[in-house]
Length: 183
Image (tube, rainbow, N blue to C red):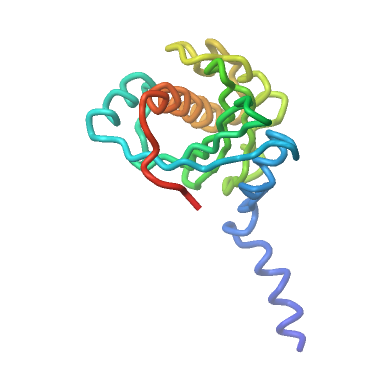
């Protein structure tokens, strides 16, 4: 009995449990981004190797997969935005963020869904808000179009690379037909 009581606090001190956590589910993030009246439709696209190369060139960042899921949100007949999830390493652990792209191809919002690095490296909401309104440009990087993030340089680089990747994907997908529904 005493061994069990001592084991639980000891497990809490292990490094893998210290910062690893899911902050928002995909469904909750989409509802938060688009509101309760929005109808969200998931569309899956498969990029050719040539399309992947063009997106990577435009983004200045590598794609993790040629399979892309876009979550298009509409209210009535009006498109209100498209969301993409991007999972990438920060330092040695993974982060998943949702990037919302407006109908005018600018960043509408960036939300952290899962962050497995220590909380000290988690980007604050105020810094993420600084990405809103930006379109894809070569200077969409920390210290240029957005401020640097003191103490979390690798996080800032990872997030801005994901935003550039997403904006480049969004531009490329505007010309494609979805392959299948994603569920």
